Length: 126
Image 1 (cartoon, helix red, strand yellow):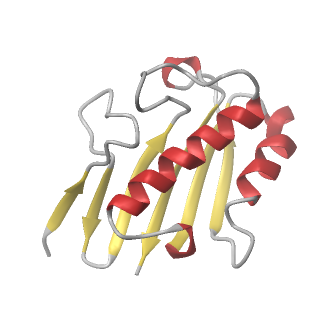
Image 2 (image 1 turned 180 degrees about the horizontal axis):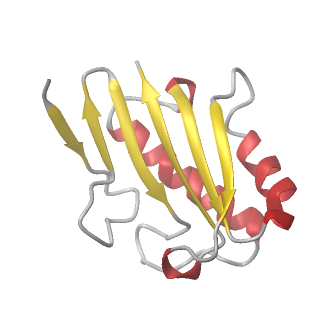
């Protein structure tokens, strides 16, 4: 099986030794995205709703670059700093999965890259 590195200019460049996504066969493994603006490199952190939408837009850009969409996502992992923000994150996240939402876990963590409040990764299959 071959693997292909996926890179979208519409999503933030990796800030470490990893790829935005790896396509292996008919599966796409998208690295955790945080609320960074791809053009400016600035954090989008006015509030948790804006952060979540920024993360989802970054995921969407990587998925699109590989020829996938949210309808192909089978699993998401959500990492948040405060489980008290779960309902707000869930409301924003849910707007991207109106039909047939993927499997998912949500985990509260002590700290995330660049001290953001939310990071989301996903696996998609065509």
